[in-house]
Length: 123
Image 1 (cartoon, one colour):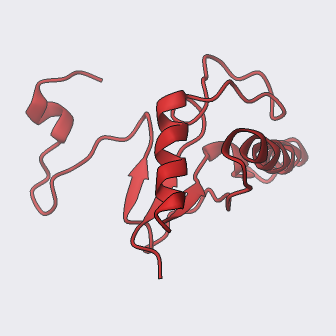
Image 2: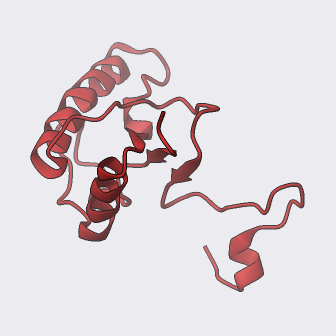
């Protein structure tokens, strides 16, 4: 049984990202996050890649193709940069013990208080 199940966003979290350049383009690895993911895996934790880009969105042919191409690109990127292919999902799971994302703002449980606001940081 894994100790933790981490969901890690791809763009601007695990891989460098500036602007959308298509489903096949994934940025260079973010060294610190790659190091974290590898350490979690070595400790026996599960890690899911949790990118929005694999969501087929509005169910158009183009969005479906972009989602499919993104899955394939992410799997290849993982193999090259993490040494293994990790599961890829756009759906949140109750098994996730942590979600790491450049756009997320943690809320202190049962308070509605934003950690970002509490620290005085801006988004």
